Amino acid sequence: MCIRDRLYTQFPIVNYGLDIQYMAMREKGVIMPEFHAAQLADYDPPQPIKEKVEEFMKTKQNKKWDIVPLKLVGKGEKAYVVKDWVVYRGKGSGGVNTQFRNIVQLDREKREWLNDRIKARLSKGPRVASKGFGIK
Image (cartoon, rainbow, N blue to C red; front, side, top):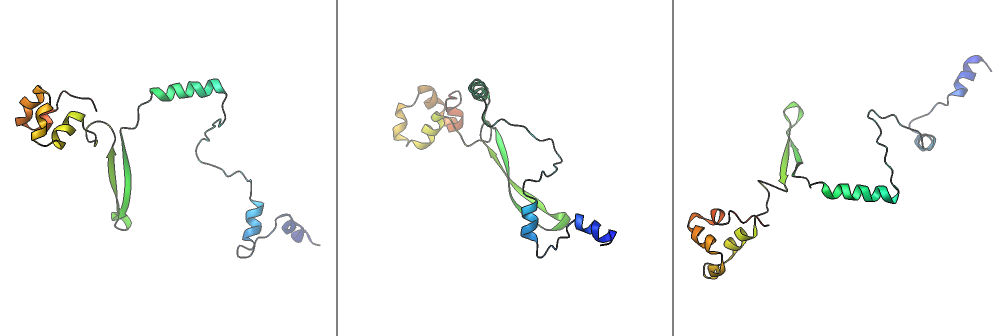
């Protein structure tokens, strides 16, 4: 056996069409390099740490809004992404206070039980009439 043949025996030659299953078997458990710092996380922390994390998460507010990509329009350099802006809290959200909901949903005859302050402002519209009642 010559020196060249010995060199090739150290590195097995892989035929990509035939040996894909063999390659997958050999590469199981191989650490793949990543280009960002790995985040270490303890998936089963001790009980005091679990309680501390739960208390911390109770103080955090929910997300105010999300931008959701819907579809890609166009091709090549002139393509753009159509996005939807979903607002959960604040201006632009779908939530209204209960007084506004009552004013809009009730018939004109059933509005007798509304607050006197609301009745006085109804001529300016339901949005103005419900101002000052911020309970949702």
